[in-house]
Image (cartoon, rainbow, N blue to C red; front, side, top):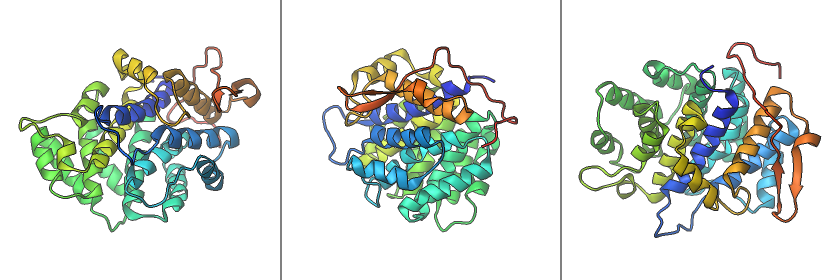
Length: 321
């Protein structure tokens, strides 16, 4: 394998968190800040402790932290992050992945764009983990995976595919997808940033936050929340593909010194510990008595790394679940 699976788990989680942190305006704090790291960690903890997906357990955890995943202005971003641990945990089987993502989408009452966006991002992440992502066919595969739908996402992804084939620049893509505040445009832009700089996580995230020649950012063309959603999705996708090796040292330092949310994840190392525990449960080698440790002074549960934990997985030979 190109990268150990555990590094891809870590890369996807860290990439999503980096996307959100880098998207925040240093001079302005938004009231609708989505507590991305809290949403991610609570879902991952449920999978770690139960070894399966139980949305009732997830909802209880969210409610205990006063987090709401109902239909709000930030629903798309929250859904992308809430379902990220599911995409990681069930990546080995497309049928199993689709079944569990759709099960999770009950929370949003199967909102069409949330459904399609979640399936699109989940499929791409799974293909990254299985090392079967082919840029030339990814868009058509995603459209097939989504299936019949009433949203505009398949049409937007086809337009994106044409722009990628023509090697269109940022300005052209921005002009095409920033004409209206349509959630499918947000997803298409994120996939552009990912696929246009496939081998470089740093460039992908910078592209998602880039200023074009007219000094306009995605933020000026779309709502600030959508801008944040673009960078979050881009970071998760590129992190899953390039793993932790693609994250620059200065960005790792940025995560180490930023309070990522409301206390659930506060350090870079805690994100790594959570990812390690999640992949250990997935692989069947996890022992809660060895890994789980509560830190009362921090008010949270942390997952200690197992010494020299290194999980590899063949794309075609996976343990039974």
